[in-house]
Length: 282
Ligand SMILES: NC(=O)C1=CN([C@@H]2O[C@H](COP(=O)(O)OP(=O)(O)OC[C@H]3O[C@@H](n4cnc5c(N)ncnc54)[C@H](O)[C@@H]3O)[C@@H](O)[C@H]2O)C=CC1
Ligand SMILES: O=C(O)[C@@H]1CCC=N1
Image 1 (spheres, rainbow, N blue to C red):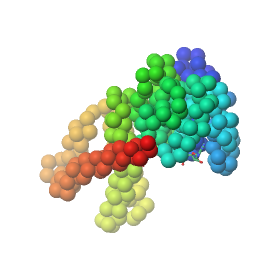
Image 2 (image 1 turned 90 degrees about the vertical axis):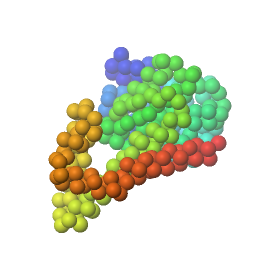
Image 3 (image 1 turned 30 degrees about the vertical axis):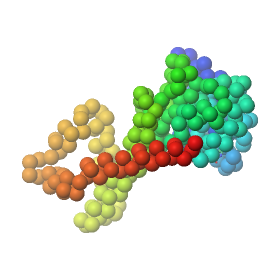
Image 4 (image 1 turned 120 degrees about the vertical axis):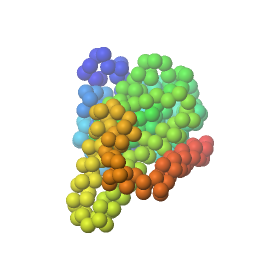
């Protein structure tokens, strides 16, 4: 149980993660750091090394099998790869028919209707899309609930994901593909930009070490300014850009190369791939 009785998690008897990989580890770490008692968290993970690491690092109960871990779950967090989710849900169907947990899925491209079908019974379901910065408590997560999830269940789901960063509810489930393309995959776009900046600076004569240090700190500083100033990115960009100066020269080159169109194409491709993945799961 969380120590704070006002927390939306205070009524959770047991939060059970099915799958103990990267994302589950991020969320479990965030919950424990945020004050949720490790004794109220269990995880099912077939990989023994991962299981032991979760138990040792966070004090949670780790099981080999999902059905053992999920007995008496109040909240079930589905954190396996999308490809195995159907089998996992079907194996848990008899159990959840009795225990009626809140089900939170973090699987990319798996729709609520599919989860409902595989679980075999009407349950409160929240589909979410977190991202890897959840590892350091700086995640961004999109959420959508089915009609069976009442305000209490929605608040519980939000509190679990909010332990690892910011959350945003979306109005229509189709928009989850866009959320996946923006914040789910987004950290990779950012890392690619840092790689490209680093390589470009090396080409201009800086050492690899200096280029990485300056590129990394520049991105951190710019990101923090964006969050802490609350100002629009376009305003912050204009403030860096002296008329006819160095930034203007670089921005002209970006525009000539079609950077905005390229980003729009990349996000459209990711959105379309999300749609394809969910169609292939049925
Ligand atoms: N990596 C990312 O950036 C993001 C991933 N996601 C989603 O999160 C989910 C998990 O992704 P990761 O943590 O990156 O994958 P992962 O591969 O690190 O973790 C999945 C874990 O599930 C375990 N597993 C497999 N079969 C199982 C079973 N029957 N019962 C219990 N556990 C089982 C595996 O041993 C593995 O450790 C995926 O559905 C993915 O779409 C969501 C947002 C971002
Ligand atoms: O690349 C993927 O499909 C997953 C979903 C969001 C981040 N990684």
